[in-house]
Amino acid sequence: MKRFALILAAGKGTRMKTELPKCAFPILRKPMINYIVESVEASRIDETAVVVGHQREVLEDLLDGRVSFAYQDQQLGTGHAALAAESVLGGREGTTIILLGDMPLIDETIIDKAIASHETFENDLTIVTANFEDPEGYGRIIRDKYGRVEAIVEEADCTENQRQINEINTGLYVVDNALLFRTLRRIEKSERKGEYYLTDIVELLRDEHQVGTYAIREATKVMGVNDLYAISIAEKYLRDEINRRHMLNGVSMINPETITVGHNVTIEGNVTIMPNTTITGNSTIKEGAVLGPNTEVHNGVIHRDVTVRHSLVYDSIVNDRTTVGPFAHLRKNANIGRDNRIGNFVEVKKSSTGANTKASHLAYIGDAETGSRVNFGAGSITVNYDGVEKHETCIGDDVFIGCNTNLVAPLSVEDNVFIAAGSTVTDDVPQGALAIARNRQINKADYARNLVKPKHNRASAKPVDSKEPLAEAEWKSSK
Ligand code: UD1
Ligand code: CA
Image (cartoon, rainbow, N blue to C red; front, side, top):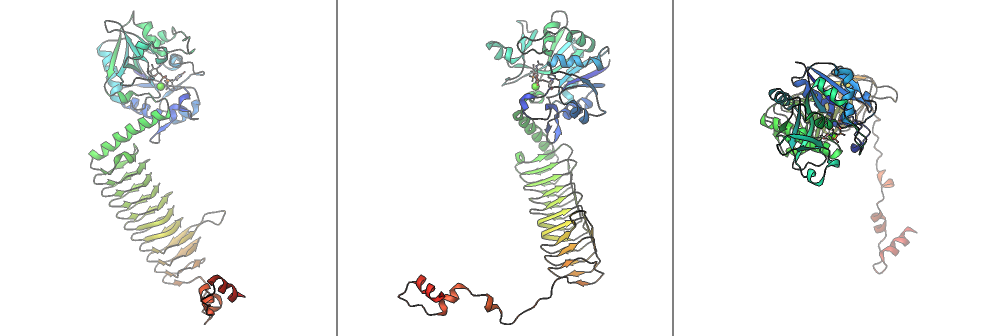
């Protein structure tokens, strides 16, 4: 028997009050719909259809090639959305699990268990339910005196008594595929909202078919996300889960509630992460590294025993034992060699360094290839931009670059070079040379006193009459 997943994701998400369609909204930088599709892919589902509508192209781009799409032209409710999938799933034999595009915490275990329960009890429709301490906003499960499900009633349509019910509809259903589409056609428009409620299939099926429920214990995993506050709750849940997994693997986290680690991040054991640190994208952190506090790594590879403090590392690599920060910025393919020191207020962009190179303070290294044992003095700049194009700087091994040096690219500095502080170097420097590119100093003997006349010297040049107030004495002496 084939198993299909039908995901409803055509809604605008009005309660989000954002431009982006709700199901595309990111949590830990990953769009909500991708969480759901990944869980479906990990489950025993054979084929997936996603119903799109509002800004359909955004979702179609996110899921390109992974699912089939159905189109709901007008958002007339969840029942209407499910029926739109007839173009993809209609006439097929099998079991369909319906999911909502706003339940990002769902996992494959819940999907598989719901299907297993549906099959074990030979149900025609299985509703996945949960008990919420605070059921606000969810449809309530109404049962008769024998405990059989009678209906699902949306909160806005509940009587005062029904509103007290804690058993809610998660929005996840397992149903025979052919029966589903036959029943969806029979749903009538709700008078109150003018929408077709998918939940109405319960009343349509309960008398002549077997309708059962499957209750989920981990209620948070089936939460629906309707607004930005719910996004923050889902994000906190995911963050805690991910951090817990890393901590159990031997990653030490100080104040973990301030630490955010994305899904595709690999962290080896014996790594320490300090407060206010975010590691996202395809990042890898190797053994012995210490990251943070106040550090961001996105698509970074941090090798063994590296320290990064108060710094940003984007799309860059830092090799063994190097220290970065405080307040350094590595970006766009910076590849920092081993045993380097990239210190205070240093920016490195699209550049590589060899081993044992140092830029300890206030430097900009951009579009440069740098050898080993190079020392960038404070204030060294690779001048890589002429206002139109970027140019490259090539620096050999064992080069000493004095403070406040401009290396005007394109430029090549060979091995064993010494560049005098304050130089603006525009010509290539050959191996072994001392480069000085600044005006020679002139000392004018005894000239300083013509320029330097501190006020107190002038005042004390004439003796001040002790009876005169000081201000007056100064005024007189200046006449
Ligand atoms: C729905 C359920 C409610 C359940 C809750 C669980 C209905 C009528 N209500 O309410 O019983 O407790 O989910 O979270 O089903 N969508 C479309 N087209 C539409 C309308 C919605 O594709 O015309 C999609 C949305 O993109 C969303 C999903 O369906 O992903 C759910 O819609 P939403 O408006 O969030 O339903 P709830 O009011 O939360
Ligand atoms: Ca919802």
